[in-house]
Amino acid sequence: MSTTGYYELYRRSTIGAALMDSLDTLISDGRIEASLAIRVLETFDKVVSEALRDKTSAKLTFKGHLDTYRFCDDVWTFIIKDCQVNLDQPSTDDSENNFTCDRLHIVACNSK
Amino acid sequence: MSNIEAAKVYEEVVEGVINEVRQDFENAGIDEQTLQDLRRIWQSKLSESRVARFTWDPEATEAPHRTEISAAFSGSGMECQHADGSGQPSSANNGNMQIPGIMIKDDSNDLGGIAQAANNDSQPNGEKDGNKDIKQTIELTMDDPSGDMAEQLKQQAKQAKKSALLETDEINSDLDDTDDEYVNFGEEENGNDVNIMLCLYEKVLRVKNKWKCNLKDGIATINNKDYAFQKAQGESEW
Image 1 (tube, helix red, strand yellow):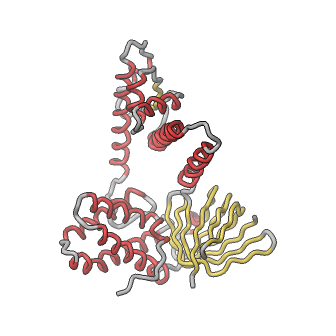
Image 2 (tube, chains in turn yellow, brown):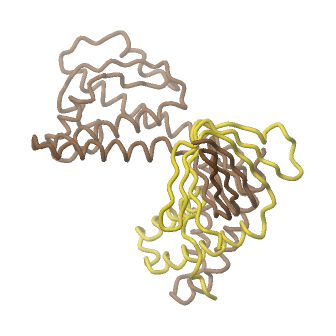
Image 3 (cartoon, each protein chain N blue to C red):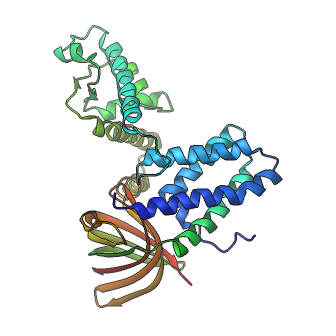
């Protein structure tokens, strides 16, 4: 089972940060080694990438004022202000799927 | 709840990771219990974040959270009273401080002074120490609903730390400015970027100042709710 070749970017998400916190707790309690924690995170990179690729169906659109754009090391970063987000996902009522936020930070890696 | 898909994906990710690392845990000689504890801690941290509703969520997540905050604050209230006890005339506010369930707001507009005092201790580890050292009057008001308090404490601690940091490094050189900018930059990055979208891009197009991007396989945290999406399209003007 290979876990290389997956982006680490999802570690910044809520679920990734929660996992890192949990691993930190176990390491500082002396229950696992750091090397095992790294292995868990690599597995997380793989599982979350595959889950987002295969298990999601929602479509999202957004509009806003592009405040900052950056393209560095094959990674796009956008900061969008006054952003209107519209989420189109199956089998939910429409009312909660439109919302706005003052500032949205987007980090996107190359899909190829 | 509009973000059921994110919750579903998260639940699958937790199960998937736990199952896939089981062999690694065995190889490292770690028992199953530790693996289950990892799952439990991970799940409870996700519940605490309240970015979505999970099947493992305890029924009332609201109550313990509130208690935690108010406990923290009555603690800091006691400290303030101590500092006040040094001969300062006590204000009417102090009497109300003990009322249970009411939040106490440390309203001393003197963060600089606190930071300085903390600075004398070489390591500022919170405003509590600062209050004790400088023995100054602290005004207490309690108009805040519980939601804002944690944020406020954090801000104050951050500010105290920041001022302390700047003063420690002050050598009256032009280069001091860079520290200032660095700290401010960090605050901006951490403080305001709570709405974040992590994803892959397929195409990014620009015509003059109009940008279009096609994104996919993303997780977004917006307004403290998480969303997972297969595809996203964005249009924006620079």
